[in-house]
Image 1 (spheres, rainbow, N blue to C red):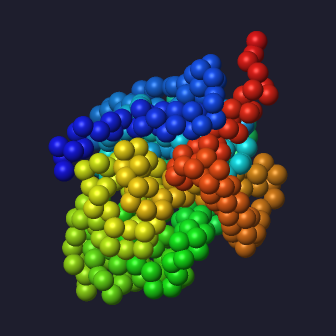
Image 2 (image 1 turned 90 degrees about the horizontal axis):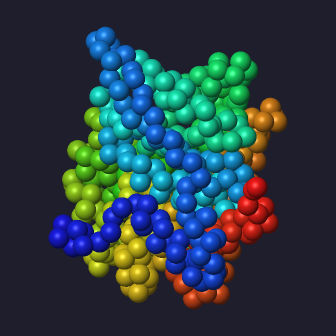
Length: 421
């Protein structure tokens, strides 16, 4: 399997550009427009000195990339991970551009990251790291320019620290500088479940198209963080049978079904889903290959690739993670009749409700959760149908169709705005 993976391009920024190029060909974009849309607008690399609990100073490296702001301020998460690279952040920023455009909300794409293993830091060290990072990227973020959000190993508390640091710097509380905040400081009801709920809405649409009843459908979830665990719970509430889930330490399997809430409680107590009573431990690799109706990759990039794609046995794949499938694997999944809902559509619920949170913060008027969910469902269904329409019009699979929809909107905005000066 590893040999097969090494012959495939796995650099996320190269993959993002390959996906863009495919859509650009269908749209017949000229070279100048392609160059503009593929080039990140700004790339900021910062050093983050942090005083550790033992009194020593440790310098971390951080990034913030603004890929495109033709349709609105840059929008995108911040991840804390030891494997963060600038190319990864550039790719994620590009994906955010196309994601926001695919669901037609007025944001551009941005992303941030810090090279750190947050599990090795105390709460105090994490706060000092976050505040210094926020201070360093403060020169380019703001409610009208670039709006961060949580991502891998960051959360609502992280956003509260960033919001406070920025607010203290400008001398006024700026609720709109980040999204994914706690409710007590301007967060939105429904935001914590938004990525998973958006995924649920498009899985329902895909199930109807494939004539697969969700009641009793076997569902496999790779990644049991915020998106994965909540997606499992929501689909369980729809009557689906969650037969396997996993986290970074491995997975569990029970063909009769798992109770998502009990699994989450077990993970909270033990630190992993593995060892859950009544289940068999399974590797993340084998989990992806289980026969099922719905597979939800909700972990990291490049999980479905040329080395394992022929062993994927799901009927629908909904990408709750960013970039979990390589371009080579995309083509084989399509050939094998597997219906893939691409990341820039399947996990766009998060950025959509982030948009709602931003709007609520700027207006200082907050909505009930029912309104948030109702508006989210409307946007996700509309976007799914627009992408499905493009897939049929251009005779392409859903990922290329989503890119055609998103890239076309950004290209149109770029043409209308022109180039200054």
